[in-house]
Amino acid sequence: YQKLLKSDDSELKYTKAVEYFNKGDFMRASTLFDAIATYYKGTDRSETVLNYMARSYMGQKDYFSASEYYKTYVKTYPKGKYVIESKFMIGYCFYLDSPDPRLDQTSTYSAISAFQEFIDVYPESDKVPQANKLLEELTNKLAYKAYLNAKLYYNLGNYLGNNYESAVITAQNALKKFPSTSYREELLMLMLDSKYEQAIQSIDEKKAERYHNAIDEYYNYINEFPNGKFRKQADRILNESKKVVKE
Image (tube, rainbow, N blue to C red):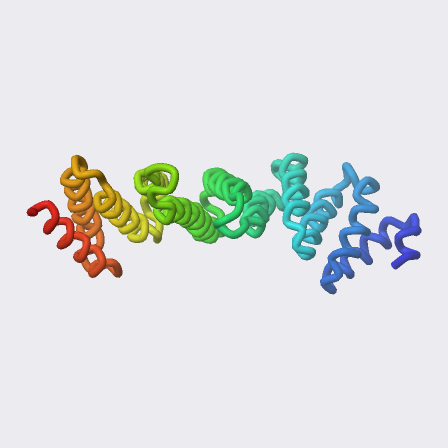
């Protein structure tokens, strides 16, 4: 391998780089491909080398570098033989780089943008179903992050202000932005919980109005989830709210 690196035989380096790639030795493969990339620039083999480079970094789980090579390929060969694969893989690299929902979601947004662009440009591709499935997963992740933010406000309660109202607004915005999320029931229940807690802790002048708000939110929840997993908890809130309003 060290002799190969010092060799001036680009054909040999290419052959051995492909061998290393096929054996799963992606680090050595990428190093050799990088060494011959300039030599093959402008030739028929150039786009193949670039494609191998991107795949070699994928093999090393260096998704950022892989995405950069896929982007370079698309820019350099907009009608190349690997362009559809490369456009999909740009989104997939960002998808694999997408972190835990509690962390910054820049990669998630980039993945969503890339997949949407892929679907728009190549609607007939056999990769579209997978892209749509990954898009759904990514948007659900963003919805879950919004739910966690709303839950944080709820847990803060009245600490340094009315955080229950912030919880409601955050949950409402999440439902508007991600109406089909699988966390829809959790967001609706959190809104009901928040309005109920807000009513409990209100000053007397606002109690009646806020309990009425909680009752209205109860019906919003059961209209969508009549047999929901939070139905017992919701019914308890309704009964307590009606009792206070009646009194």
